[in-house]
Image (cartoon, rainbow, N blue to C red; front, side, top):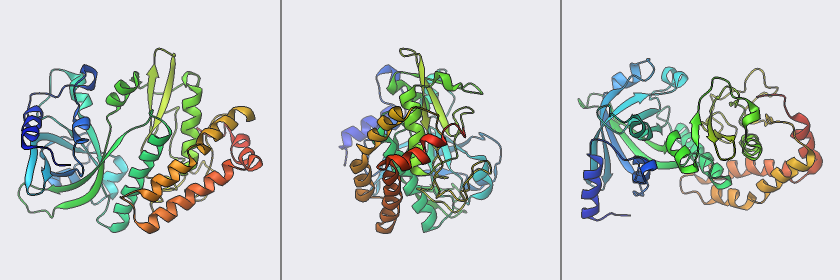
Length: 346
């Protein structure tokens, strides 16, 4: 896609405004604006040495964000950048980051919040690390196929440089994650952040779908009760909440070499699956199984047709998903692995 010069001018004016309009106001957010570019090639100029060395939480520093099209700049914006992820700040050559798409604090917090995005990049400068990022990106898309109650993602090719040019630039496949408040507005709900979440407020369909999805991808690095790698969106009209999972680099489907199951979970590697969902009747869970089975072809085709995955990676991910569906298709096996294993975790 190549927007016209006039359209680029309008976007440039829009992005240079004192603040961005929010999705609640019926105007575009920055995440929506980025959807217009395919491919999305970006550069971020900021002090890389400071970004990698600063261990404080939310230590924001100035940066320049640009969307590139060939040799031209579609737009340029002063932003704020911070490293995120406590563990990855310590272990990565370059940590994942978050970006505030405004240079100064705005008077309207809701507008500011909705235009703060997470950007997932490779932890180390290796093909394997980039492959993991590509696989995690696809995992988000798989959940999108199962439900709208999921974080949308936007693929990007990113180049990070320092103003003094003394540090080597960092180039990586990357992806943006939809802002939590934008997701809530899109779904007609609101985020809630209690220290401990009562399972009783969870919408049954949403809870069971999320639990089975985590089992499908081989993820045990999550908890609804303490909101670990799960956001909770509350819907007043049904007086229920939905768990929205995120951060899948510890799942078996991605298969990073640093991922390990919790000592409290009786599995040896993240490649093993372990169900962490609630107890329900056999009839109830059969409906959940059937809903996943109805999407089997779409899920497998999405992996097989993905433009971001290498051929061998597609085979690995497809084989792992096929193992899951082989359990779903055998009632006795599904009963043993899932229904009889309920309420033992999370």
